[in-house]
Image 1 (cartoon, one colour):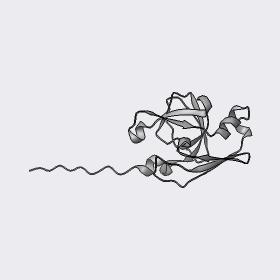
Image 2 (tube, one colour; image 1 turned 180 degrees about the horizontal axis):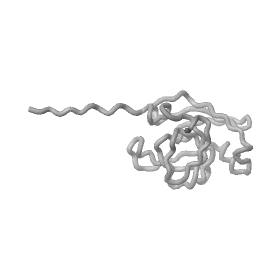
Image 3 (cartoon, helix red, strand yellow; image 1 turned 30 degrees about the horizontal axis):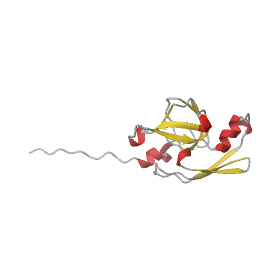
Image 4 (cartoon, one colour; image 1 turned 135 degrees about the horizontal axis):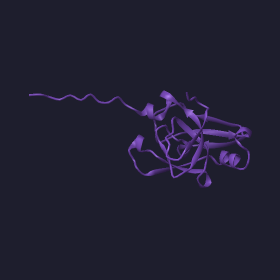
Amino acid sequence: DLQVGDILLVTKDHEFPADTVPLMCSGEGGNCYVSTANLDGETNLKLKTAPQLTQTALTSGGGLGRVRVEINAEKPNGNIHDFNGNLSVDKKMASLGPKQLLMRGTVLRNTDRCLCVIVYTGNDTRMVKNSRPAPMKQSNLD
C-alpha cells in the first residue's frame, strides 16, 4: 500500500505507480526519460530531471539515510502539463516544476533507475483527477 512520502526505486521499462518527484536519476546530470503514451497518447519520450540539490546530495556519498528532504507540493489537481512546489535539503531550497513530476502511468525509458518520493497517490494522482467517465454509446435501429 503506497503512501505519500514513501521512497520508490523505479527501474528501466517499469511504470510509476503514483505521482512522484525524482530525488536521483542514473541518467547524466540527474536526467531521465519517460513515456507518457498511457496518459496523452504521445509516443515521444519526455525529459525529466531530478533537482540538483538531491541529485548531488545522494550521489556524493550522502546516502538516503543521511539526507533530510522536505517537499511542499500544490494541492492535487488534474492538470498534467503543470506542477508547482518546492523542495528543501539541509535548509537549501529549490523550486519544483513540470520537469520534476513523474506521473502515475508513465514508464521509465532509456534510464537504468530513478529514486523518487511519492507526492500524490490513489484518487489524488493526476491520471485519476484528469480522467472522465466513458461516454454512453447508443445505437439507433430503424
